[in-house]
Length: 86
Image (cartoon, rainbow, N blue to C red; front, side, top):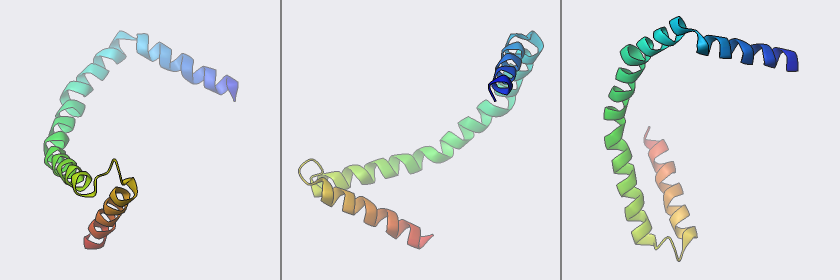
C-alpha cells in the first residue's frame, strides 16, 4: 500500500507543477466553482443567520452558561420538531 500511496503523491505533485493543468484548474475554478459557491452562499446565508438568531434566543431563554442541560434539551427539541415537519 505504501507504494501505491507514493505513486499517487508523486502523480499529484507532477500535476501540480504542470502549467497546463494549473491553467485549466484556474479556469475551472473561475468559471464553474466560484460562481456556484457564490450562488450557494446567497441561498444559504439567510438560513444560517436565522438559525444563529434562533440559537442565540434559546441560549438567552435557557441561560446556557448556568444550565447547559436545558439548552441542549431545547436544541434537541428544535432539531426533532424541525425534522418532523420535513
